[in-house]
Length: 110
Image 1: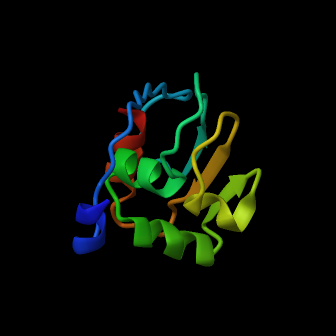
Image 2 (image 1 turned 135 degrees about the vertical axis):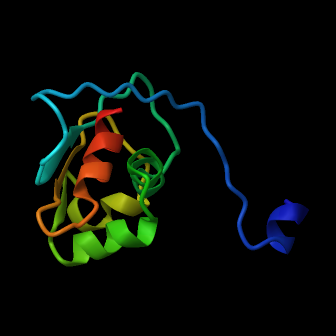
């Protein structure tokens, strides 16, 4: 606990394995993502950390998308990014205006 109070932030890594399965062809040219979370067990890993790591983007970008209503999460809505990822969550991201959408879609598909 002493280290936590002396440092700005400590990254805690959880034993999470991500398996990605594209449902519809290739990611090039995708203008939206629909992600479904299927968890074998509960995890304390926050949804924003999971998505940022897997998509190769910042957590603040996720927050901006949510504020601009380009990112929607069901269930839980607005506060879901700051909560642990849960089985059955669905995440929709509108990438139509993003210049790096192909890179994001590729990261999402593995």
